[in-house]
Length: 501
Ligand code: AMP
Image 1: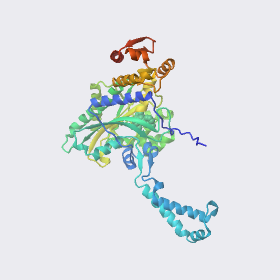
Image 2: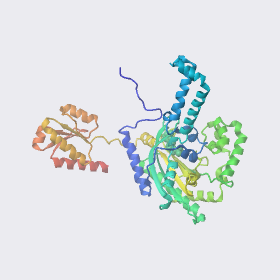
Image 3: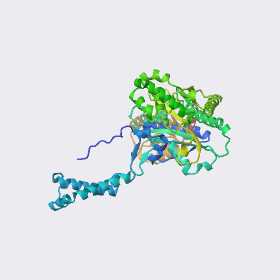
Image 4: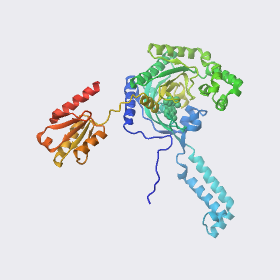
């Protein structure tokens, strides 16, 4: 009997189907257009990278690296010959000790038992080698793409290009999160990064102002993009988390830690743990009982060094110059280790608790951390799944992308004409369905209706003989007669009017 196993998409992953994929394409195409106007070019990155790349950049104390990455040994453990040898010996040992779990002849059993110490050692060594060698270079399905962009920047010597190098990407990311609406294990991001090599003779006094302009332009670009998509209820939050120095963020984190220690008993388990591992993350907490406590904690804005404070003030001024409305949010720290100075997050309507559609920030130093030259960076990642959800919730979904023309051909003699009509209409960019076998008139119209066609082109033997084709508008049932050329012109005109609406 046939195997009745029903395959289903793995938890946290999903299929995207038409017509929804039309919307995905529109969201992606709009990103290409808008980002292109800001001078960004597309980079296509591998889906998996060395685990170390993410561990080093994102940070060991983050949720992503700590528990959410899909990591596997390369080569896979089971195909490693050392492992196979070790496993086989272990199995034989087990059988020799307990013949009940497998068959083995008396002679081999005695031999193995007599040498069992040696065999145990061989099995252990094989397994140990296998595990060690297989784990030497594990790989990870990318949980985000900033680290990959930096890796590519270094690998291709992009510091030699005109700076900043402005790149955007789009594609799937993978995190082992608890799936819910707006949170998946395979989700899609559209992101951009602007990377700029630091040259030795750079005028440091101009740097904060210049960097702030780049930050503001990157943020402006996302906002222009969201406006172009018609995303509703868009709210931009910004903050500065300073830089990692005793007179700036490090000093602040010490003060924060001390303050948190004092209120430790009133905090939840996660926050208690974070006092030691990642105290800034406590500020992210959504726990109701902690909100009053967090509001009274020291704020980073009061502890920025002079350069970071100047940079932040300039980012705000630049955003104002560009007409980008923002809200300051001192608790916006972002989860990942590599951020410094500017951080920002954008939320949108219709998404419930998972309402962040974009997160980003500045990450000077990340390229260097990954083995490259001193480089500055700023970027963001947009959650495409959530942008789509928000557009759908707001009803901003033009699904009128169905079929244009259904060709109802009747009689074998009309087939050649129907094929020609389909070819010419498709060449003109119309969406055409040509049924593979002829149908009765009623059935053809029913099918055209089901497919959401705007028109049915009726080709019977009379029409073919006279060269006057019948076109029926399905919405109101009206119909007209057209010559081959006249039909094309009529449909083109109709399409033009549709675009203008
Ligand atoms: P992050 O860098 O983690 O803040 O991610 C940037 C954006 O990606 C977030 O604001 C979300 O819109 C989106 N995102 C992150 N994780 C997920 C997920 N598991 N499922 C869907 N979207 C996500």
